[in-house]
Image (cartoon, rainbow, N blue to C red; front, side, top):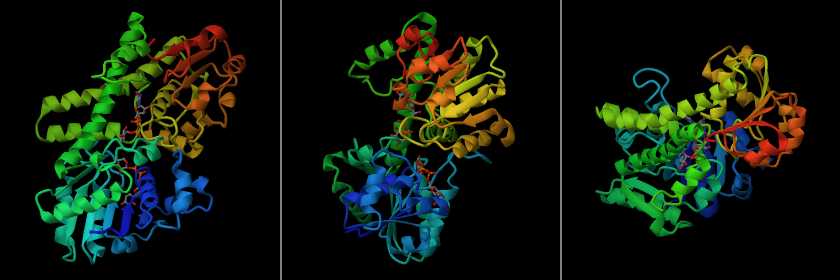
Length: 464
Ligand code: UDX
Ligand code: UDX
């Protein structure tokens, strides 16, 4: 089976970069990315490629090369579905905010809507691919909807979870550790569909890195991979608190532990807490699934990763207040970095939102600078938490255009995203602009302790 036409529903952080790379590597395949959000599609089609809605190093160059050649962005979902041999579903699956499983389960309403739309439109056989991270056994629901509401056309459902990390998406897509494809291994049609997708990836990924499994293994592997990664961060963050009490230095501990080849060095960086659209959502989802099967111990085990992460964010903010003589009311505090990690403009579940919220409750005056996050996004993140009115958020928080502006006349600085440009700052100049004693709270362990000694900051870093 030779694929000529691919459609992807959802032009987000996953759909956008993934389809851009497929289009670049498979120049004979037409790739159309559709989204119901007109503004987003308009941004993807902006003549100035710097204005595409997602910031990822290297992405605008690929879009420049492929857009209009074999990569297209559109709001015409029906047309793209009709034309495609292969449809990727890449819509968001946030944690449910209502009903059964509220605050835990994944909200699958968008996935179901996609399935119904595909069923309504399709006139020829299709391969439908779950790209979004989904609870294990979602493929069964998808298949049911497609088979029972469609026009009698045949569907093959594959699971092909995305392992890219934001900020390194292009690099991860070009050179993945592995590509995972789950499908109906027991039937000829299932194996053919899997082979068609293997063919796409084989254009640039070595065959031995393409793993084929049954659908349920593939769905569960994605949740498991994220749970394991998040668990590493929560593990080292738990140790960071112990380091602060005992005089051990968490960086040194992490290095010593990580050099054991069975443990490995990655994902052992202590921080103010992990954020991002995936870790929390996927673990909550895993916990919910375990509870559904009445596996209480399994659920509690994974839930602790989230509890630890919430504790770390709260602990950091509480530490700031306590260090500043138990009051920050009316004090100007600069927050450097709002994104959940460096090299992305994504702020979903960013620790900065929770730290700012805590400090606002203590009536601090917050000034934020982030190199890539817009003012509009910062306010919308705080409004979404719902701790106070939109007006109160706009009154309490100012967004500025440089680190120096943020820190001018501030009592304290909190570094919350590991943007490279924060390392290059003239910290002496910043110190001179601040009220004294000047406090520097480093939630990302970006700065050397000598910054404190040489310059005079009251300095706190997670884990020492
Ligand atoms: C993805 C996956 O979907 C999620 O499951 C995974 O765990 C993380 O990455 P992401 O690409 O980051 O989500 O989400 P987002 O940037 O919100 O993009 C989703 C897009 O789908 C949005 O642009 C939204 O407008 C679009 N959408 C949503 C549709 O086009 N149709 C819908 O019915 C719902
Ligand atoms: C993650 C997975 O890495 C990726 O494979 C999956 O497909 C989606 O979820 P992402 O959320 O983009 O990717 O970012 P990631 O690099 O995993 O970082 C998540 C959070 O953990 C960030 O807030 C980051 O700052 C934090 N982190 C990471 C630490 O605090 N310490 C570390 O050592 C590593």
